[in-house]
Length: 481
Image (tube, rainbow, N blue to C red; front, top):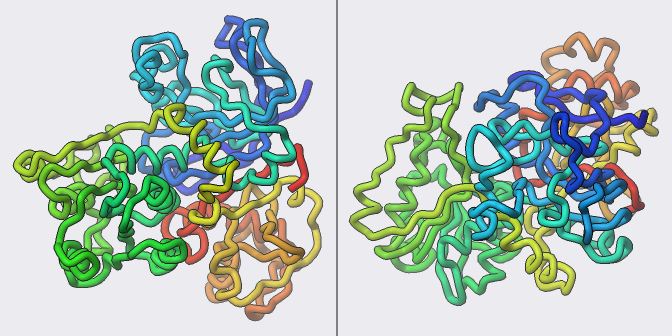
């Protein structure tokens, strides 16, 4: 039988690469003739994965992660008519039957037939139906004719894979936030959060014709990334209020529309920037959005948060100033993005060079195959040399970052951990690791990888200088980059 491996959540701060079952065209004991099996070409690491990894959800141990998938069809069920073996496809993270009333209304994020516990399902995510995730080598996709978006011929698609891989979630999600906030030609919009979804949203606002896109965050590298493609920025660590900083940019302390790309792990502003305050973003957006304006909320809010700051937060009850939003006649749109509403048009914008989201969200590419082959020593460059070349460590193999040209760089998260090991001593898995200086030779990369796995995953979600600004793309490699 063919083998398969996947990234499994094993408790707060811990993931493992595990051997998992090779997917079958089956739903329990029933044959799944409407499904396909994909050999995964790319799979992205989403910020919402980090909520689970940080222990902020009720995700069970052993859950195979990953809901952002692009792959090649290698097997199709009898009832699949239009998707063919050999097709390269983008997989919406929403699993949808295409037959229920919600799917027929285009509300594929809340399909009624794919999750017995609640409306809506997704691959590899807590409370989303128990579907096996796609941070793996192979995955089964049901309702293939309805769900899958066929990409153009493989050579053309692989030329733009860094952009096209984002069609499974992050780009439609950010775009959905902009659309539901009412962004259009000439709009002045504030985007709360400069992580990957926030940056994708800002790029989407520009695609929709916004006159001024303002991105607010607390991490300087994120703000610099937003500036790099023409956004105005606000540093939320400053004592000035959000409205005061907006006024410095546009002349009044209000915007026409706003988007929450942060979600339930929000922090305060100014002197409270280090304190978790889950209602901060929603309340601040109601304050700065003009009367009659709309607020898009693609940021994730959960019904159960074991790490909530108080008992109310643990059950998703937040101190939202709804009276202010009511008084200003704000419109709110929450919930999962219905990816299929946008992914085809966004694909066209990418293919015809009207939209370059990978550059905006600072995609980093890593290769699992290359990690298997690499056993050589690597040198750690200066920290500034890796600010925008971060990648992610997978399992206990050191994955090398692929950038344009021949140069390869160590991920900044690994560098930061190496510095920690140098100062405070290596943990047990890294016994024998020699760290002398920034230019130290790392003779045992696999040992380092095992030692820092947990730290890398954690730092990706907590604002490591490189990874805080990036979407990480795992290339599992059917086609050469």
